[in-house]
Image (cartoon, rainbow, N blue to C red):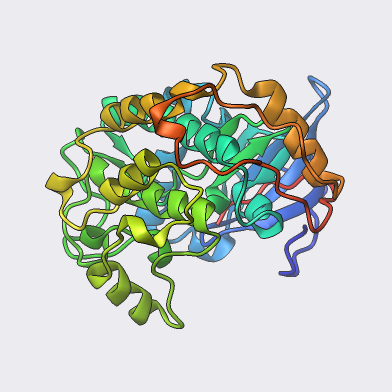
Length: 336
């Protein structure tokens, strides 16, 4: 999928040769480029020329690059280099991930097999635990910021509005709101201090969406969505009967309105998720690869891992398979 916003392809971006514009965000255009020095593909995020005069935005762009450079984790996209063009535009070269965003996957398979949902949640929680231990809060978790590789592994993207809780310095004014409204926590919407608990709430929304095929709070307007996030309470009866009871309760806890009632850390949340996954094989890479391949080819999937007997799986209906309703085309890397 290529961005529809018109923009002439430059002959070069730094030492890279652009091949295709693959997206854009609020701060920059995203280009797929060839690195001739190492004969590899990279992704370059280039700041919009209209924003170069704003010092705070320049600092935010540079901060994202610095965060990516220092967060070394297999589930975080790697940064290669940051530079300033003669025009003043900042550019950031990053790892190219050959896969699909979780948003693209959910557009084709709104309710993935439960084993796949658990796999995705486990991967994301591991990277959140790593980032939160270093006092980095993402603040913009959403399906379009999660790349899924062909083996199912997740790469977390777009740390453009991430906050370093230990830096003693805020890049935004108190009471300001940053993030994507549909995946914000109550404290984000009301302009209160955002903590690691906020990332957990956002992930809870994504978990609910994967289990039910519906966003729990989305309204027709941003204002209505915000009101739903603040006032609608999620309870276990809202999930399909095939959802394990322990998993329903886990999501409900992630979506508690008060931070004190949620899991107190990503480590605690992933620990509880481990218990829920107790009946599944420990290595799901092969099953994930087979499911994603079937999905991309528009084929039915009937080779899901069979859970062993476990109290957490008493509510699981027979059959995991979710037939694909459309085929994927090409590789897509998206920042928003």
